[in-house]
Image 1 (cartoon, one colour):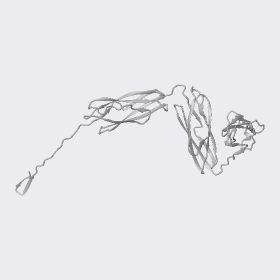
Image 2: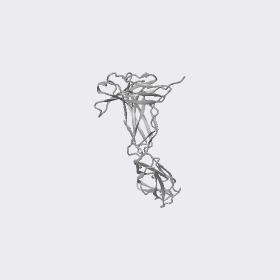
Image 3: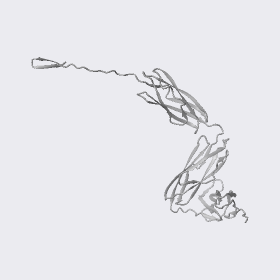
Image 4: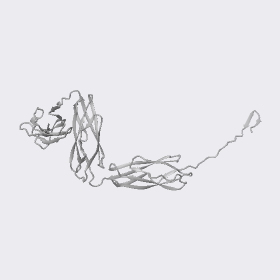
Length: 340
């Protein structure tokens, strides 16, 4: 109760103040990890390894692990710890690492969520080195990037990728899928399987609807454990008239030169020009390229059989003086005999 007293000309007041202090709770769960980084070391591709990750409740109240998640599909947690871990107690999280997909150095993050009020989320860095088994198929793609140069608007531009299987491979390389962007078409049939040390061609057609920069892509999916998916960027510049030779129709065959003549090293100065042939007839045809003196030096392959709708690219071998000139290429075509 306030009390007052007068001393001469001053009044002194004394005030009684009461302060109510309620109870304060200091107890809380606290997640303490045994390690913040786990290295699985070298793992053979296709194997799975388990690792127990220790943790402790360093708090004063029960700890609950509410969720465990990973940044990559290779890491999984088969089961979570018990719902409640008493103060001072330890437990384990079992982590399974499946060595699949790409090989080489891999990194992932494991996120552990709990009712720890200070750090409700803690992380563990997961590393591993995935080793490819000996003799695994290895994809090579040449070129790694397609440069079409200047192309014509609304005219198909052809390009070819050389797909190979490494010489050290002991298994066939399987082409499991080929996808392309909207302005790019993969010509069929494309290779489905490539033997060790061999190469096959994948042909694509790019169609630019408007003038300007052309940016397309092709994705190749294989059973190569190192690079299961390869992306090939395609670039060029489209103009209304790029000066490309117009395609021609010859007795049911679609013929068009692809790109420019390219010098071939080690051939004495000869050049190579690609020619696309598409069978637009209803039957199978046989095409021959007899050598012509003074014009065409050689053609590879010199003979080919085309099914209906089948495309093929032929390499024309030219002498230096033939480049840039108009030359005639003799083609012999054998059609099936139709009995009436």
